[in-house]
Each structure stands twice: as C-alpha cells, then as structure tokens.
Image 1 (cartoon, helix red, strand yellow):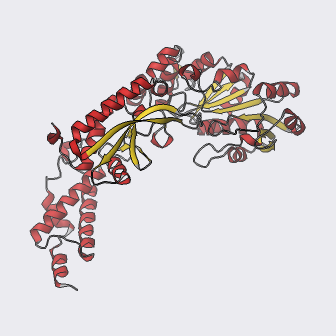
Image 2 (tube, rainbow, N blue to C red):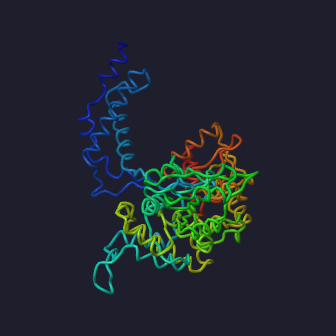
Image 3 (cartoon, helix red, strand yellow):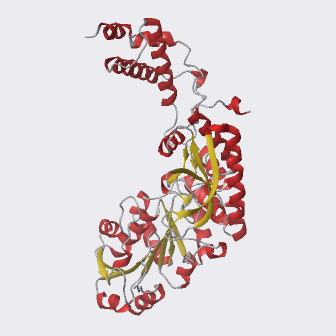
Length: 489
C-alpha cells in the first residue's frame, strides 16, 4: 500500500475518540436545518451520536482508500471527521416530511401534498391533535356518539343528498361502496371509464378487490345506452360511472349521461353510483376554468351514490366522501370494512372547517388556498413574478439572471387535464451552473424549492409561491451560489 495512504489511515480516529472530542460541541448545531427539533438541553440521543461518528469515520476511510485528498496529520484528520460527524448528526434530526416551496405551478400537486389547507382548518386540526375532544362523544346526551356526525350534516346540507359518510380517501370510498352493494354481483361500467387513479391503482383492480364482478361495455371512445341495457341481468348489482378527471378522450366519442343511467337503474331497481374522483362543491367556470360536473350536478341527476376526494378540488384534507341514499349509505357505514378505512380526528377537524367555509362561496374562494390559487388573476401573477425577480437580483447580484416570462400552470390532482392556466414564472440562470444543477441545489436547500425545467431553463411559477415564501427562494439561491446573506445587504 502507498506509504502516504497508510499514514492517512493511521491518522483516522476511532469512533470512541470522536465521541470524546465531541463532548458538548454537538449542542445547538441544528439551527440551520429547517424543522430540526429543540432537544432538552441541546443534547442529542446517544445512539444518533454513535451512528453519526461511525458514519463519518467510515466516510473518511473510503476517501483515503479512493485516493482523495484528506488531512495527513492526526489533529487535522480528527477535526475533519468531527466536523462531518456533526453534520451527519444534525441532518439526522431533520424530519423526513418537510415543508417545501412549490414553484412548479401545479396547484394540486400529488407529490407535494396536494391541497394546502385553509388557515382555519390548520388551526382546528391542531386543536384536535393537542387536546382531548368529543370525537365519539355526544355532549348533549352524555353518551357515546359517532365520529362521522361532525361532518355528515354539513355534507348533506351542501350536496343536497340524504346521507353522507367519510373515509380516509376516495379509493377507499369506492372500495367500500362496491364491497357493500355489489360483492359477487355484476357492476357495469363503460370501457372508456376504467381509469387509473394514480400510483398504479386502477378501477378494475379496486373492483376485483371488492369482490364485485366487472362488466365492461362499449368501446374506449364510444359507449351507448344499448350497451348497458344489453349487459343488465338478474345478477347486476350496480351501474357504475367514473368521471375521467385525469385524462380526456377527444374526437369521435360518445358517452352515456348519468341521467340516462339513472333512468335505466330506476326502471330495473338497480342502484347507480358515480365516482367523481376530484369532486367540487363549486362551479369553477365562474373563475374562468372549464365547466366540470359538481357534486350537486350528480345529485340532481339522480345518482344513488356519489364519491369524491376531500383533498383535490375541494381543497381540504385527504378524505374519501360518500353522499347518497340514506339506506345505501347506512349499509356502507355498517360494513366492517368501514372501520378499517375510517378517518382520524385531525382529518375530521380540518374537513369540518373546510366544509363550513363552503356555506358562502366567496368566503370559500378567499380562504381555501386551492380555490384562491386557481382563481388568481393573471395581472396579480405578473406583479408577483416581477417582485420575486427583483428580490432575487437584489439577493444574488450578478450571480443569477432572473427574467419574467409567461407560462401555463396546471390544476393537477387528476382534474381538468386539458386546462392550462395563464401564469408567469421567473426563469433563472446561475453563473457556471446548468439548469439541472441549479434544480438539484434548490431542492437540497434547508427549505427545498421545487421548480421545473423547460427549454433548458429552471423556472419558478409564481402561481404556487406565496409572498411569504419569497425569502425561502432567495435563501435557497444564495445557498446554491454560496452567497452570504450579509453580502447582498
């Protein structure tokens, strides 16, 4: 072995030596990591310290063996390993689930947590989490109550349906309805509506898991009433319609309206169910978006059951909502599967607050971030983009070129797939750095900033960046360029 390399290996300290050198020097070193918790007395858990020291020693051993430049003298090596161990220990305290800045322009971004809750919903969820509550206790009667009672009245009021039930997501709502009403029976659905709802979960697979027998009718692009009528027999348990909210079939197409399915179902005594997916309680066309069927549209058309998500166009927490006929909803509620897919107290608290906001449409639009972001005027977005570009130039000087350009935002969340919302973005060009390199640096920041790359440029769409997050953007850029905050003042 190379003598110099052997000397450097001998200079490597033991894990015990690094632990003894550390002493109290690990205290208070987590402040630069967003979300790192305050620990009692600033002490780090012993197991975490040992793991960090071992990892640091092994990393320097790897560097020496790889022939990389490392300190040759023992004091220098010990200092270098100690510094790396402190870095590892601090990073280990940062929660895995972290706040990020969404600069993609996708409003309901599934990978970034979908809808942001209204401030009042956040506060109510925090109250429910931090204290005892009447989750399943009837305060008036002084006896056990139903957790669903906190939102079911609101849902029937807003939707106009007879009854409601809430579970943990819309896939669970569909599964529960199918298992309750059609286990072992035929469920008739148009071939063009057999959607994949994300994460490779598909309607046929959910149906198979429920025990229902899938009966596809029609063609991918055209389905007619006669296709359903020909398939109905004595073993048919349900007529099923899925809103194709995450894709569009255009051209030579035909589909059967929900009202027509309802007519068939009533003539033959077969329930009709619609999975709206990303259901909405407001007509979003008044904000300039394309007209999408609302929950109330499905109820007015006569659907016996309607399911939809709470965390997409509704702008609430993750939940699956069922509204419909009282007897059918009651059957779903009594199914043992309902307990396996029930929602927790924080979700209920956030959902209740969100639904209360919908009692006044203008209040909902102003208070629910999803609705507010979707309806932000382009003039305001242009002003916001110019403001962000100015802050970036001031913070980073000549290190970054920032220019404003028009772009198209997306609704996201499997809704309005053809809709492009007029927006504005700040295109960033960092000196000596590629667009992909800058993108990686930005998402590695203390508060990660997620953007998108188009035409070789790193873009930050301001539709989904709040004014309060602009400092996070400039700080991330300064970190990427290694510009000290003091230097820009």
